[in-house]
Length: 294
Image (cartoon, rainbow, N blue to C red; front, side, top):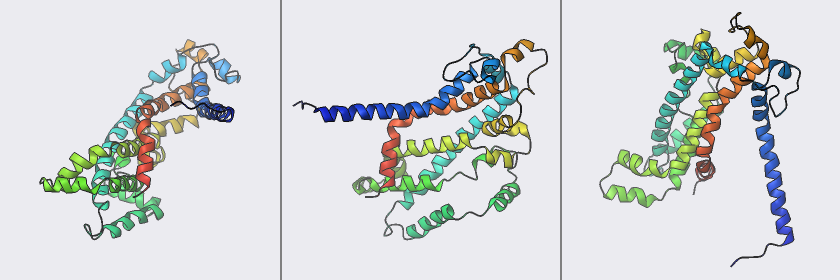
């Protein structure tokens, strides 16, 4: 049976739509502004004429970006970091969350180990011991220095173990009756059923690795080993024409430092913008179910 909406209910729904549209526009406006600057001429961008639409449309900034071997090298290092870091982190997170999700009667030291992990969130060993440990292991100037130190995010472990605890215990009992061990139960039952939580923690891991710049600055001694965000940090605080050849006079006319930086920032943000729509339907479910224990 279809219910007739009252005038107050209609106004409420319209107000919600307008409010959410304004919030969405406010979130998208900086990205649109950066894109508009990157597609504008250098003179228009420098004069502050560009708002949300390109002025004197040109792709010179992108021609400059994709013609830089330094930028492409940094982009490739970040891709390697994301792929390796996400794969290792998700594997370790799944293996760690499974035993910690068990009842203390099944895993006696479960509470002790949970507090050990929580302690690492509250207290840090400090930057210098962290750096000295990585240096002693011989990881400086390698991609593993960007991957291994943060390979087990404790927040993701807590999110996933709470999701595991929300699953019916009868599933594991049925698997035990059929002769499945812990590894078979984990990979054939728990992992497939925890897809929303895995998508959520995977998204956190991908974004964390992609956006991280500080560790690249500390752990890489040579600029040609910088990941993309560290490379962007260095060019944003410095003028960005050092890679343009003197004979590219036409390119110099169309470009400015502002348009070049805007193009590089947008290219760096674009991969993450592509990932979000595919994982968004799992995101809310994974957060809610992984944050509350039954």
